[in-house]
Length: 235
Image 1 (cartoon, rainbow, N blue to C red):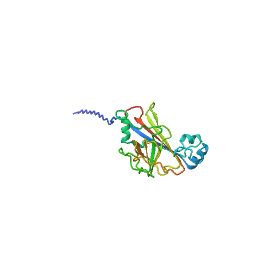
Image 2: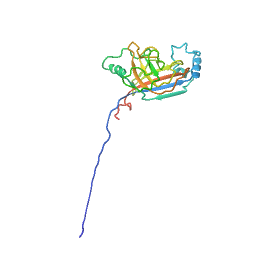
Image 3: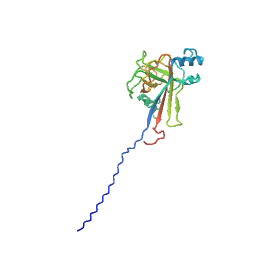
Image 4: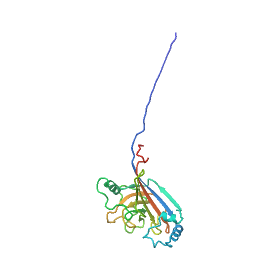
């Protein structure tokens, strides 16, 4: 007696775990260039200002371009990407420019400041000023008028909006833990309570160390608008 047994099994399994989603982001990067007291004094003399900032407007520090012209590179430079968020008023301005009420005082060479403060409170959408800003007597916040008009670049991807401000030897000499941008028209210690429709555009938390008296620090914010790939691709 013979027995023949044949068995066959076929199995196909297909699984797909790749959800597709489209990401459009707004990011702000913070770059800080630092020049120590000796570098600042040397650059001032080399550029014909003497040993003080008296000939310069207010508390405006020398710009990186001026230090470069004097043959001086920063002793330290840091870059913190994706470092802050656009707050509610910032979005009111941005979206109002597309469909709604545009902002009354636009950012310009005379109406834009980068503010820095000591607070480490996390950024929140509802914030309206730096958290180190305690009012007109604040010793834990400072808003510096920009060195030049904000630069808008729409011919490349992603589009960018860039603000730059140089903090002179006698201002913002404490721990830099937060930063943001507003549209006020003069350097000062606070935004909280200012009249004139000035408001905060963005705020972020970024530990940059302690600025010492006599030093010049230059801060540059680069706001990017677009997709992570810069080409509108789905990721």
